[in-house]
Picture 1 (cartoon, one colour):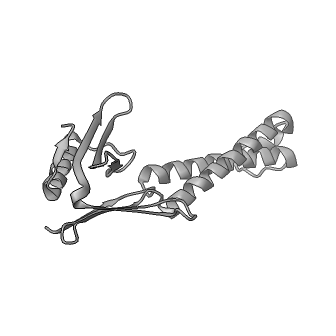
Picture 2 (spheres, rainbow, N blue to C red; picture 1 turned 45 degrees about the vertical axis):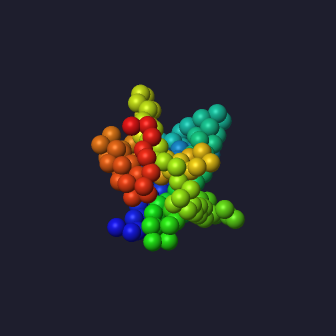
Picture 3 (tube, rainbow, N blue to C red; picture 1 turned 180 degrees about the vertical axis):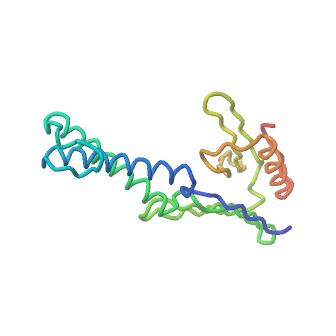
Length: 179
C-alpha cells in the first residue's frame, strides 16, 4: 500500500449532537419561563411560570436561558463547521505525510501540515490511565515536534492503539516509542 489515509471525525459526533440539543431545549425552557414571568402570559405549555415573580426568579431564568441559547448556538456552529475534522495521509509515492484539519472560520480555518517522510523520527504512543484516560498516537519529527494523529475525546482500546501505531511505523519505516 503506497498511500494510506485515515479520516478524523471532528465535531460531528453523537455526544456533541446530544449536548447541543439538550442545552438548546433546556435554554429555551428557561428563557420562555423567564419571559412568561415578565409578560404574565404562559409561553410554556403544562407549566405555571407566569406566576413567578420577575425579580428575582424570572430575571435569573431569563439570564440562564439566554446563556444556554448562546452556548447551544456555539455548539451547533461547531458541529456545522466540523471543527477538528480532517485526515492524516501517508503517501509513500510522494514521500510526504500530510496532516489536514478544519478549524473555526477565519484566516486559519484550514490547517495543513506536510512533512517529508525522511524527517519523521518515530511514532510515539502515549497511554495514561486514570480518571481522564489518554490514549494518543503522535508523529514525532527529527526536530522533536510531536503532532497528534488520533481523535481528541474518544479514547481507543489499547489493542487498537498498538495495532495502528505499529502499522504506521511499519509503513513509514520508523520505530514506535512508548509501548
